[in-house]
Length: 126
Image 1: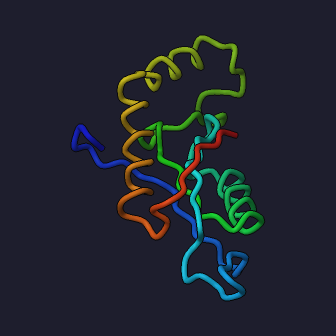
Image 2: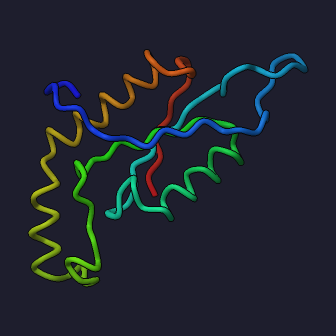
Protein backbone atom coordinates (compact mmCIF):
# COMPACT_ATOMS: atom_id res chain seq x y z
CA UNK A 1 0.00 0.00 0.00
CA UNK A 2 0.99 3.65 -0.21
CA UNK A 3 1.72 3.68 3.52
CA UNK A 4 4.23 0.85 2.91
CA UNK A 5 2.13 -1.68 4.84
CA UNK A 6 1.64 -4.77 2.69
CA UNK A 7 -1.85 -6.20 2.72
CA UNK A 8 -3.19 -9.58 1.75
CA UNK A 9 -5.40 -9.91 -1.30
CA UNK A 10 -7.26 -12.62 -3.14
CA UNK A 11 -6.29 -12.75 -6.84
CA UNK A 12 -7.92 -15.17 -9.25
CA UNK A 13 -7.39 -15.55 -12.99
CA UNK A 14 -10.06 -17.57 -14.80
CA UNK A 15 -8.97 -20.94 -16.09
CA UNK A 16 -11.52 -21.12 -18.89
CA UNK A 17 -10.46 -19.63 -22.25
CA UNK A 18 -13.52 -17.35 -22.58
CA UNK A 19 -11.49 -14.43 -23.85
CA UNK A 20 -10.57 -14.22 -27.50
CA UNK A 21 -9.37 -11.78 -30.10
CA UNK A 22 -10.03 -12.23 -33.83
CA UNK A 23 -10.98 -15.87 -33.31
CA UNK A 24 -7.85 -16.72 -31.31
CA UNK A 25 -7.45 -16.92 -27.56
CA UNK A 26 -5.60 -14.27 -25.60
CA UNK A 27 -2.96 -15.57 -23.18
CA UNK A 28 -4.52 -13.37 -20.47
CA UNK A 29 -7.96 -12.08 -19.45
CA UNK A 30 -9.02 -8.94 -21.34
CA UNK A 31 -10.04 -7.15 -18.14
CA UNK A 32 -10.05 -7.33 -14.36
CA UNK A 33 -12.53 -6.54 -11.61
CA UNK A 34 -11.57 -5.10 -8.26
CA UNK A 35 -13.85 -6.81 -5.75
CA UNK A 36 -14.78 -5.34 -2.37
CA UNK A 37 -16.03 -8.16 -0.16
CA UNK A 38 -18.56 -8.17 2.62
CA UNK A 39 -17.48 -8.12 6.28
CA UNK A 40 -16.32 -11.75 6.11
CA UNK A 41 -13.35 -10.73 3.96
CA UNK A 42 -11.11 -12.35 1.39
CA UNK A 43 -10.34 -15.54 3.31
CA UNK A 44 -14.00 -16.54 3.57
CA UNK A 45 -14.61 -19.63 1.44
CA UNK A 46 -18.03 -18.42 0.26
CA UNK A 47 -16.53 -15.13 -0.90
CA UNK A 48 -13.76 -16.97 -2.73
CA UNK A 49 -16.28 -19.32 -4.35
CA UNK A 50 -18.42 -16.50 -5.75
CA UNK A 51 -15.35 -14.55 -6.92
CA UNK A 52 -14.09 -17.64 -8.76
CA UNK A 53 -17.51 -18.20 -10.28
CA UNK A 54 -17.68 -14.54 -11.34
CA UNK A 55 -14.24 -14.78 -12.96
CA UNK A 56 -15.04 -18.01 -14.77
CA UNK A 57 -18.43 -16.75 -15.99
CA UNK A 58 -17.18 -13.36 -17.20
CA UNK A 59 -13.64 -14.30 -18.24
CA UNK A 60 -12.10 -11.48 -16.21
CA UNK A 61 -9.50 -11.72 -13.47
CA UNK A 62 -10.52 -10.64 -9.97
CA UNK A 63 -8.58 -8.99 -7.17
CA UNK A 64 -10.01 -8.46 -3.69
CA UNK A 65 -7.82 -6.56 -1.23
CA UNK A 66 -8.08 -7.49 2.45
CA UNK A 67 -9.58 -4.22 3.67
CA UNK A 68 -9.85 -5.69 7.17
CA UNK A 69 -6.11 -6.39 7.42
CA UNK A 70 -6.52 -10.00 8.55
CA UNK A 71 -9.31 -9.30 11.04
CA UNK A 72 -12.67 -9.80 9.27
CA UNK A 73 -15.96 -10.07 11.13
CA UNK A 74 -16.10 -13.50 12.77
CA UNK A 75 -19.53 -14.66 13.91
CA UNK A 76 -18.01 -17.46 16.00
CA UNK A 77 -15.81 -14.99 17.84
CA UNK A 78 -18.10 -11.95 18.02
CA UNK A 79 -21.61 -13.36 17.57
CA UNK A 80 -23.85 -12.91 14.55
CA UNK A 81 -25.65 -9.71 15.49
CA UNK A 82 -24.54 -6.90 13.20
CA UNK A 83 -26.64 -4.49 15.29
CA UNK A 84 -24.59 -5.20 18.42
CA UNK A 85 -22.13 -2.97 20.22
CA UNK A 86 -19.42 -5.55 19.40
CA UNK A 87 -20.10 -5.18 15.69
CA UNK A 88 -20.05 -1.39 15.83
CA UNK A 89 -16.76 -1.50 17.76
CA UNK A 90 -15.25 -3.89 15.22
CA UNK A 91 -16.55 -1.80 12.29
CA UNK A 92 -15.20 1.45 13.72
CA UNK A 93 -11.74 -0.12 14.00
CA UNK A 94 -11.80 -1.04 10.31
CA UNK A 95 -13.52 1.87 8.73
CA UNK A 96 -10.70 4.36 8.59
CA UNK A 97 -11.69 6.10 5.37
CA UNK A 98 -8.23 7.30 4.33
CA UNK A 99 -6.68 3.84 4.83
CA UNK A 100 -9.51 1.99 3.11
CA UNK A 101 -9.51 4.34 0.13
CA UNK A 102 -5.73 4.07 -0.13
CA UNK A 103 -5.93 0.26 -0.09
CA UNK A 104 -8.56 0.33 -2.85
CA UNK A 105 -6.54 2.79 -4.95
CA UNK A 106 -3.39 0.72 -4.52
CA UNK A 107 -5.20 -2.46 -5.55
CA UNK A 108 -6.51 -0.72 -8.68
CA UNK A 109 -3.01 0.53 -9.44
CA UNK A 110 -1.67 -3.00 -9.06
CA UNK A 111 -4.20 -4.26 -11.58
CA UNK A 112 -3.32 -1.53 -14.06
CA UNK A 113 0.47 -1.74 -13.76
CA UNK A 114 1.62 -5.09 -12.46
CA UNK A 115 -0.97 -7.67 -13.40
CA UNK A 116 -1.71 -9.46 -16.62
CA UNK A 117 -4.65 -7.17 -17.39
CA UNK A 118 -3.38 -3.58 -17.55
CA UNK A 119 -6.03 -2.04 -19.79
CA UNK A 120 -9.51 -2.51 -18.33
CA UNK A 121 -10.25 -2.50 -14.61
CA UNK A 122 -13.60 -2.13 -12.86
CA UNK A 123 -14.79 -2.11 -9.25
CA UNK A 124 -17.51 -4.40 -7.93
CA UNK A 125 -18.95 -4.84 -4.45
CA UNK A 126 -20.83 -7.77 -3.07
